[in-house]
Length: 192
Image (tube, rainbow, N blue to C red; front, side, top):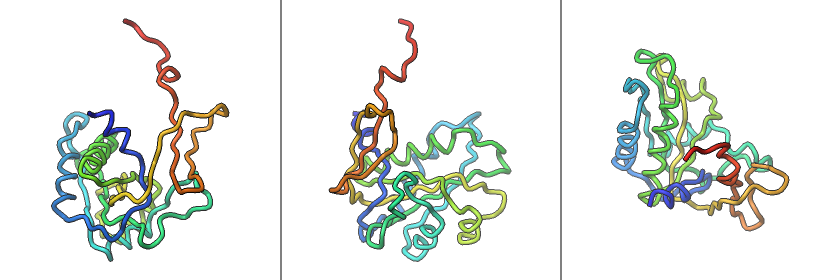
């Protein structure tokens, strides 16, 4: 059921780094992005994929992880992603990518969950460093990096507390808690 898949598709930031993801799996996930909706059907997204350890380490060095977790600088060695998909916008096709990359990334992450993997969309990127590191041409805008791997953490959905805070947190057991607003709080009107 799609709701179960969406509930399982939480941002995962710790992985079993030694569990490799092969290139065919990455290509299959990118294909889900390719098949996703695109504004005006322009299809301006392109991708760089990596499942090579040395390239993964260079991509990792360009990322910032989990801004709300002030005492955590990101996954430690052994818990880092075993693959990445860098989502790019081809400016020769479009100048504005709207929400195409969000739609494609969600399709990719749902596909990852469906095959037992997990991931995280990252937009806190040192784009200049990543561009130099991967040799990305200037006509490609770096939109997102999707980190992927076998999940090493439990993530649970919680109701937003009485203080109204939506900040995620980790408890003493390392379980990652993500507050979500109630459905009744986000539908402001309905017409039946």
